[in-house]
Image 1 (cartoon, rainbow, N blue to C red):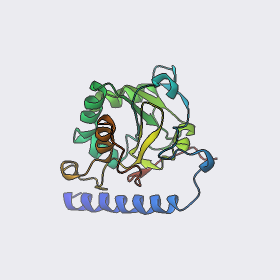
Image 2: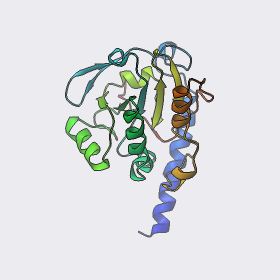
Image 3: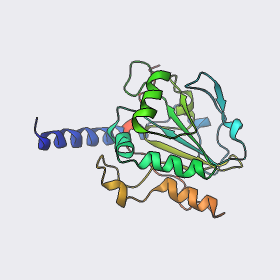
Length: 216
């Protein structure tokens, strides 16, 4: 298979994924009455981490918390890890004292589903550095935070208010080079938050692969 053909296939998949994402956004979200929204208190949750421990949002009261929805089979997620972008952000902000939680909400048998061993392998392969990795195979946390595409990003301030949710940046592509020229919405929100300023852009539409939730 030629490089040009592979590029065309990836491009077609990206377009189909984005169109599907737009169609999904036009439907009422699961649990929309309790879904997270900017300016409101972030919904409480409890989820298992890869060590089998219960993790709650309340565990990090007083800390800025970043939630990152992932799918290890998604090329849009791959763009940010294969370029080193996601790991660099994880290290930068956890070194500053923030909490970074990576979350997998894919259902068993679906693309992106991982158990503890697979999640550890992903962390090792990508040299990722989140504070913790949470497993959400029933999609409870994902639906609560209206995660529809990966990567989906959320920023919660130290008082528990959700200040940003949506895309990681403004370049909805699988091109690694685009990371360097993109406006990173998560970085902008975290920098404004650290400076005591209001977050200018509090919501965007996440781009990427649709979250493969458990079918009801």
